Length: 252
Image (cartoon, rainbow, N blue to C red; front, side, top):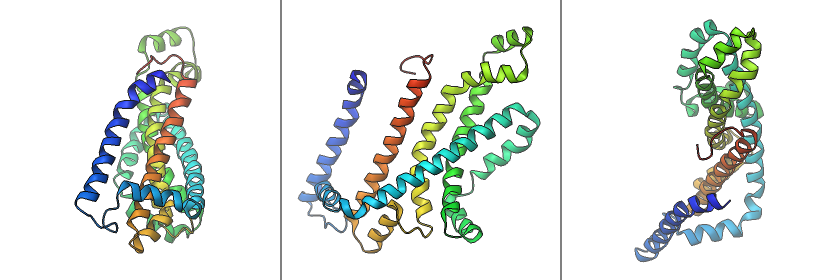
């Protein structure tokens, strides 16, 4: 906790300074609230309208958790299969990279046409956003397994399954968590994009309604909620990593 406070006060100070400059600029140059509201106005709207967007926040958190869980599971399974089956990796890995070049915002309407306006297309979008960083990170972790230890296990008669479970998988865990942390931040944005596909509630819906009615202050409230959710998910994954990976050097 002390280390976190020692490292965290600098970005907190810079953030506070930016908010102060923003507030002073809004007052000094008399910028209209509909164009760029001051931080104090955004904070006031965020407090006053809590009851109005509370259910949107809960809906986004639920969608994010479901999508992130499925995307993470798919990513870990795909990475394990590609690592254990080199021929499949050579055939499919370029296609997986190619799939990430398709913009989600372009793919989303097609998913609605194919699967309707239900939960399925939204979860598919979050899964597509989440699984790629985990696959790349896990494969990189598997590849960096200590060759000497791997050779020693083979000499000792270890099977392919034993080498994977007892050496390669534990060795790849820090890399997997790096991918999970990236995916955790992406998953919130994926959920917001998914909610633009005709959802009835969620931060994405709240943002769309706010922008269509020129309520810039509400749009900023939505933006800050997305940022806080991303930061919260990142912190949860980071905490889980510290609890599960005891052998990782401190500060790495």
